[in-house]
Figure 1 (tube, one colour):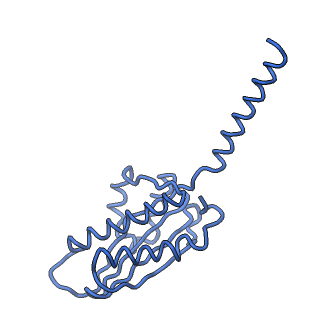
Figure 2 (tube, rainbow, N blue to C red):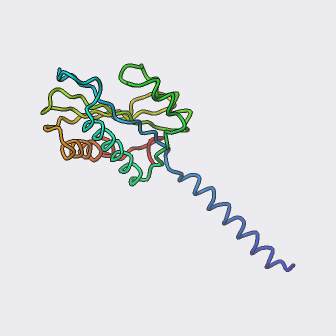
Figure 3 (cartoon, rainbow, N blue to C red):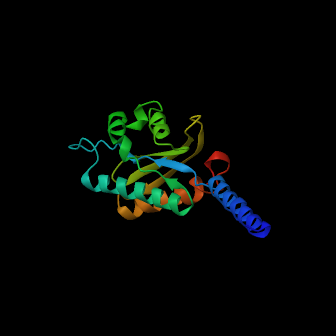
Length: 177
């Protein structure tokens, strides 16, 4: 084997390893986006838990947050492996950060939890927190009041939060993709 071919192979190996390390350094931040929950303080009688249309909207806005984070370069984790622990722990608003060990076990670096407070059938409030899973520190939080209990109003509220609170200004440090 000539010195030239050995040098060429060595250079290719070094370049290949460099690309692998660069790809690892740029690996997307892993985020656990938990399902948004409903906290109904409206006093409407006859329902224990969200109405079917509101359950659909909770899934709709959770999916929208996951999609937007994925589009922004984050690795949105599948929560299915921890479904039983999640079901046991919810609602998260009452569990004093019990979702953090769940997010850790999924390999998340950051987590997003969300809550929709229903004040009345006309007035709702969408809230989220983004936290560092290792420390529990809140990195971002936001709230948006919406009017009308419709798919459109819920999506507009969550769109506002993602654009103006969750991703703007861009996340830095461990939370950056």
